[in-house]
Length: 87
Image 1 (cartoon, rainbow, N blue to C red):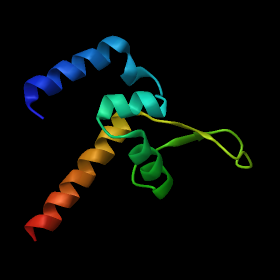
Image 2 (cartoon, helix red, strand yellow):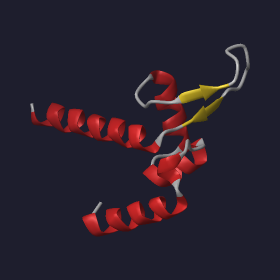
Image 3 (cartoon, rainbow, N blue to C red):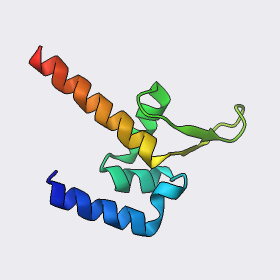
């Protein structure tokens, strides 16, 4: 993604206040470009930091995402992937 496009997306997120609150899976998918399925699966497998809302006995618990922590985890995974291809 070019820096110009990334800067535009960053400005839009700042205007909407997405960095100041927890996001739903749908909002996090739109902000990061990942699919909702990838986010849910990655959160369940521990690849992405997620906050589960609701009691542990509930069949379906809501997932909430902190955008800064999510972007950091995505960036770390990309670096690990690049390192494994170079080795």
